[in-house]
Length: 546
Image 1 (cartoon, rainbow, N blue to C red):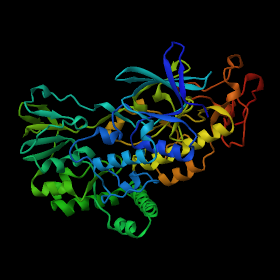
Image 2 (image 1 turned 120 degrees about the vertical axis):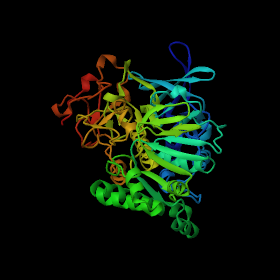
Image 3 (image 1 turned 90 degrees about the vertical axis):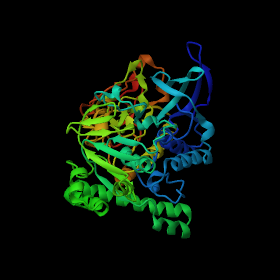
Image 4 (image 1 turned 180 degrees about the horizontal axis):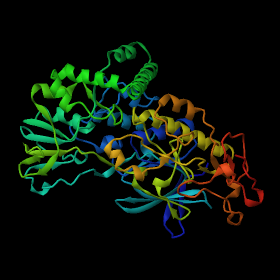
């Protein structure tokens, strides 16, 4: 373990050094810090957060009705029970839960707010990352031995906004949910929400309670499912069992149900279509209306399923407070939206719930030994590290279940890797691919994912280069993973030996063709994968068998 402190850089600027830097103080970052505190209390770390508050996504999005789209027994941390009555929680309650967790585990004082990371550069001779940040007081530089990216994949600076013809002619108020104005008054007004995803179906019931009328304008329908906002079984369990035991039981129950439903949807899509259509008919009672506006052309879970607690969206339609129009936009007019059908939707407020922009690793640039890395040409290792990029982990959740389920598995894997590196005096751990990537990282058909697919790492079809969308497989796989498999491990004794030509994978793409024995090193332990080993100086190198 290195000691925290401030050292001068070659250019004379002060550099604050830590064992670990965590980027992001949202759900992932606070969870990662809490796990690091629990499992490696000797590690010194700092969290760099670009915003002024804890919460990440739950601090960014402040539009009316913002809530979880997963149950809180799986979205909450397994080590800190969810105690609130709602299982589908409001955004403010989630933000408070994250903040309280940070305070309880001593994480809050480790956060540097208003510190936006813009670049991270790795130097193999020192086995350190140099992290460049911007703050209100100007640039500040940090360094660390291990970088843990918990910044999610949303672009916080911009949402996705199509260029609609005539938008400049609109005389009313134009809003994107990602940047919701606090002073927007829509009382009694005509509101049109463009979009049919989770944001739209969350916004509309909330807007409808005050607006004159809300219209959801969609190009094509999305699948919706109805869940209760409160779970009476959960209330009973929490009444009679210790909080942590009740939470563990409920978490297992919800994980099992979610995974079972996802598998059923992928294997028996027609059966699930009937179930979802039946839920819509239960509330709307109109087959023609359901067929027109709530029957997508794709299979369930080709895109993420939208949750409507208590059927609130359907209830808004039944009351006449909201309606759905399925059509394409011809152009924006002074008074609203003209559709291709010729109909015009009058609007005082247009909400463009047209999706999000995605950005890998929080949009920062990555350099390895002076070479800028194209993240889109890397291969993901166990869904948490990247080929050719040393001592860096990143956190990404599931697309078919709650984010935290996978985020917590990653947060537990990283301390195990760090403990191995300390125990065996390993300075550098670099994933070295043995397969070609042939699948996108986020293997789903949602438009917001497809637009950014080329920016993200790829994955392969075999472990450890595959990102499973299955919590149970990951819980076993990451929990029992061979930490040395398909890794180039460089001992601390080899650092600075430039003449020894310590090999590392290239920063982009396939690092080494270990099937032909080109990855070199001195093996330690009994790793099972090709390319397993610690790279020693050239004089001591010996080929690793495939």
